[in-house]
Amino acid sequence: MVFFFQLLVNGISIGFLYGLAAMGFVMIFKSSSVLNFAHGELLAFGAFIFLTLVTWAHLPIIAAFVVALAGSFVFGFVIERLFLRPLIGEPLIYVIMLTVGIAAIFKGAMLLLWGGNLYIYPDFLPLAIGIKWGVVNIAPVYVVSTTVGLVFLVLFGLFFKFSSQGIYMRSVADNQQAALSLGVHVRRVFALSWAIAAMVAAMSGIVLGIINGINVHDLSSIGLKVFPVVILGGLDSIGGAIIGGLIIGLLETFTGGYISPSLRDVVPYMVLVGILLVRPYGLFGLVEIERV
Amino acid sequence: MSDNILLQLNNISVVYSDVIQVLKGVSLSVPKGQIVSILGSNGAGKTTTLKAVSGLLKTENGSVTDGSIQFNGMNIENLPPESITRLGIFQVLEGRQPFKYLTIEENLRVGTATRWGKPYKKDIERIYNYFPALVQRRKTLAGYCSGGELQMLVMGRALMAHPALLLLDEPSLGLAPLVVIEIFKIIKRINEDQGTTIMLVEQNANMALQIAHYGYVMENGKVVMEGTAPELKDNPDIKEFYLGVGATGNVRSYRDVKSYKRRKRWL
Image (cartoon, rainbow over all chains, first blue to last red; front, top):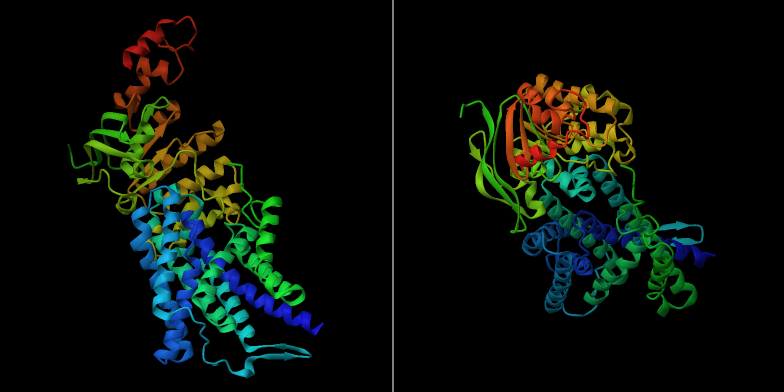
């Protein structure tokens, strides 16, 4: 029973991180219909920036975290400006192939800069924030990742629901022509969604790095794991991305715990196939409002 | 032309995808503070004319290849829609095009895009004042509203932006006659209260000529007739082809076989 709860807690906190990573992916897809194959590389990039700031520049943890997120935000902006903007109006398949190319370039660059070794952050989380609740013991890392996940979730929820920029972003996803006719700066919305996606990806990369250690290959392969998550939740649903993330996170940890650790990376894709057969639009994909 | 002219189209040609010519030398002018109506059958080029002004041609791979469009004396042909909307020109698209997954109020807020950061609460109240039907639907997703409510919504959404020139594309499309009358009353009120200049594209010539000051008739990508609204209403050809009554004032019958030949002279 203790083992079960332990797995449950770990699954939930990893699930939140997958969900956040997927959320950035969904944002890009919703606003510009682009599937971003470089998402895993954005995760890894954030984690390595944080690592460098902590171990090499010796910034305090909080400062390093904020700087890494801000840096990733700017980085997302730059990617959109340099690579994506010239392709606006071209067939989508070119844009998607472009993200595959970006992924290869970034991965190569990161391997050059940091090598393929496994790095571990210095232990900076105070043990006191771990929760001991009866027999269940929640490690500080999981407390932090769940908290950060929840905070970001709520912040983005509020941003999309109430802020003007958030509403403009949703309007572009909804009907681009109408948004243009009202003067919404569609290119700026694309840039903003890349920036936010990169920032959120960096955040999940950093926290996943704290849990599993950081390594270019491991972190960028999470970009692939985003696919079962978003297909499960529905490609166009941000809330669905989080729930999809939780389901995949739980499945992974339970498979790893009860069946076999070597199966844990396979199960998400088995679920993916199953879901696609039964509900091709995902669990929370938009039900098309047909009446006009 | 006098200083009163807000928008002036000089002999413009529009070509889609570099090959399909839709407008073949259209000239028209819209005086400040007036309602100018463009009438014509399907495919005459009315919507294309509006899109040439609003810049939305670009998204459909069309461009103005000849002639000029002047707004307040400034050339605006082929500018991107982001710049044109910032000059105060807003198009209300044909077929309503709401943001289906946003609530009514969120839809209205998108209209503040060109005035980002400025207070908008008063504007929303103003819109609810024009369209009281929207108030009780404010928290409803637009996708679940009726056609009449949506037409009010998209017009209100554009009014949120304080337009200097409002381009309305077939506001009566697919609406019940009573709703059409209400919509047109509101268009007239907007023009009178706010002094908003309006360019109105319509199939419903009868309604359009009741509120417009001036009208143009387009066929096959050209302007074939123009005049003040009363002039057009009294013109025998307009009566017959657009208002559905025979030249003598009776309802048209199949006996008037010559009407087809007379219409052909126009095209």
